[in-house]
Length: 323
Image (cartoon, rainbow, N blue to C red):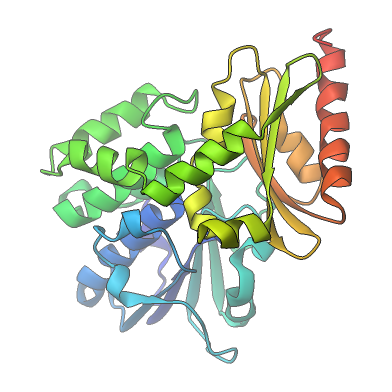
């Protein structure tokens, strides 16, 4: 794929959707593409563009394009084209996978190494983020300040503000070009990445205090129950950043954060310094991601889930004589 316009193929009715529990890259890439297709739909021959995303954190309210978001879908909606963004597999689309199956053409744009190539057209590229890919698929002169804002937010969230190893010279070049569009990059970094509410800081503190070290300090683990989330009146969106706080613990190779989403159902987020391929572990449990950042959903007892994940981490560390 060269540019988005090359694959539209006279599609009149287009849907855009990201993954369940959308993060910054998912929201950034989705709103950027939605704005582009909406702004230039006459030129592109498009009649209708819809965007589907689950509820997201308040820190992203400053983005344009949010006004068009639909949180639910009619199961019989038929689109000429359905574009899935930042989804490693079809099940990551959640309930909108129903209309994905009905679309005449499906497109999968992503950067996860564990992507299952689930669409008619698959554009899975090596990049820091899906937002970086979307930048390359849009002509630079079509990128407005508002589109640039969405793309920049997506990039900083998946690169940890350019500190993760997925950051490349190309990433920095693209970020520079987005800054040239007039975006307030400093405010975007502070307001969407670093700023936390008092409740969010409380929950981060609680998770850090109750964390444990295992495998001779090579792995740090923390978890939170739905009951505790209710006590602090927080949602899963408020847990963003917990695993990163765990990851920076000195001597740790893998950070694991587990939170309850439903009775006996847990979402697992893992971060690695690079010695352990957490994507491999996540894929084994039905999830996916990157070598140094991945996640999955596990059912059963919390202690069993943590023990099973730890065994896989231990196996990789033993291969390199780290335990």
